[in-house]
Length: 203
Length: 174
Image (cartoon, rainbow over all chains, first blue to last red; front, side, top):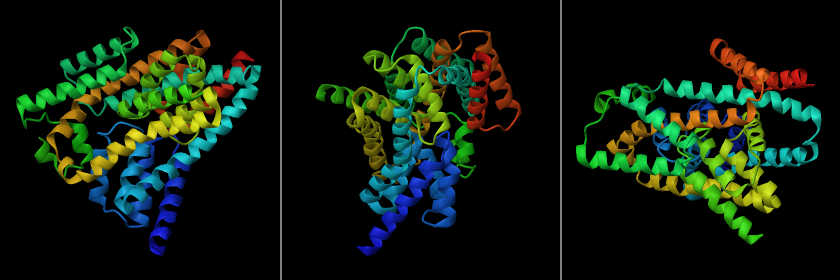
């Protein structure tokens, strides 16, 4: 019992720190988690760690949260999962609450408005560059480009909800899986994540 | 009040449930919900994305906390933040239980392949959406181009990009 409480406290402090220091969220936190759980604590081995990164991507939701829940559960069951998720979300929760009350007081102040006028277009650049980085993990073919363009038009021009599009993808994958069985298109992105160890299975 | 909290919960639950790929890919989803309820002006939402970039933590959590607080105070922020996390929680736990079956499953690998181009489309849609509220004049076009150049040519940190852009905003529009 005492051991469990000590370990929970440790899980809390590790994931709180991870939540506090991961700017840009998601994938940026992977090296930090690896250092804490694999290198420092030795709670998880390297291969399991890489598998976990791959598997948690298939679940919707913020990458940071998913990873914390996954590792929390691996380390100490349900209690571990709850504590890790709570700890990783707490810093951003507190910071945004602070920001919200700040913004209520300072919105309309011309200096603050001008600063945000400059920041907003920078966000366009950051997002575009993020999309560009992501696109490098794909082996582009004509039909993939077409799908991407259609999905883009559907959301930004026709205002179709992303929920519908994602449900469609889940359905198409399922049909394809049932019809074509085990045949899998080689994919360089996944092989990179798996660091080649399973490349022959996938190809 | 209770109705608002319930609406918040449902909306952010949906965002958590369908937000594959996290981060930028979730922006379109969040924007869709905010638009439907008129909870936040789009300018304000883009400001939140900016704050999310500057502060630690996922955009989904940050938006949940902010929108919840704005719509119904502390209770709202707790409800919306929880609602984003609950779907992940359930799904990741299920995943952990079937981990050994799932981790080499063909369906999962295929799903990732099919989802990836769609996620890119959603990220681009987010860029289009943010551009609509933030590209207002020649200066803002210039900022986008400079940011893209810096990101591509140097190893500049996104937080630094935002600080520089904020300073430029103060100078250009001041």
